[in-house]
Image (cartoon, helix red, strand yellow):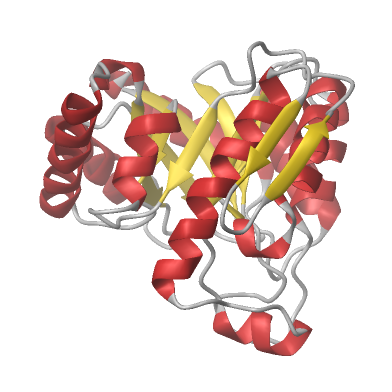
Length: 279
């Protein structure tokens, strides 16, 4: 099993998160570090602070030197996919080829209502998501992109400069929808993340992903299957390690250790040592 960290950018400062990512950058067990794409906190006081994810990634790409970086996951509803493709190319260049592009359809009604962002019904949202993923991949990969979808229309569109990683930075699809999300992951993703699910449910979702891959003629081994494991600051690393082991036994490739907000950098050393026997 491989390991990563995630800092939820709510209720903490940029400096706190930067110091944690810098510490993770020095620990070879952790292959990647992730944030999220929200504008309001999801826990505690929703009027509290929450750092924006993609500008944070650009800064982290400059501050760190080794660890891969990603947003788990970007809400497609918040930015036009062509704009997001240009953002991703730039962050990949800043990080010298260490970006993971996390993508999801979006779901947060509170944020959409507050900002006047449309949150379409689920079917339309998934239709838009499918078009958006394809547009992003093509813009990052091809010299020009012409696309005439139901919702997106591009004509000889360019995304320059191209990212360092070719044909494009790896795509992570986040979500649990068996019919649409997992099929999109089977078609486009280099990593799939279920966000939250117990090991039994997660294994069932992975089997659905495998079936979609088979129907599309794709080798499921090409897709890293990842899980999120929450680290409880009051219990030490033990329970998180046990949970990671259960996911490993269920077939997970990558455990992303979700750190409590405000966790100091020195929690990472003991956590890494406790996880190493699973690596």
